Length: 237
Image: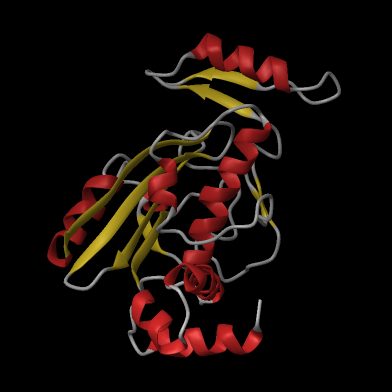
């Protein structure tokens, strides 16, 4: 593709010219200009709305391994104080002008990855505190380790995307609405998380009241090699 043509098309698009106007200025047919316009758009930096807020449950790192990042909230962490539930909450909100777009992720960091999502939802900025409070109310407020803490977006990515990568390795796909909410987290390179998932590095399944326990165990059995440690099952209290 002609470099000078690409540069000229980019300049005209930055001026707000339509494809037909670009073609007219350059003396070309619109059909000849459209592939160049698409190429220019593909090279343009991807816009990400500013982060309006990002929170995680304070106990997220319990029984997990973390490489580096001493500044991440919730570190250092030893045994989980949550009854070893392995359930972490992550909520991300983006500024979309007069409103915010937010999504909460229920993450099983021991085995299943993203079990559920709340959102993404667009709301008035003033409603974000209530949305955040409602989402994190699923964790006992009397425990300081369960309370949400402000976190960098980088940590949210490593928890959510990393848990999804880990769960997929065990044969589990994330919640059906995950892809829609994941857009708020930004880009991710597969298997690049600095978090070691699983309870102390091993798959640990705790069946919840709505889980398909037998189906889960069958999936784990089919994806866990004979040389790997077998997942442990414990009834949720």
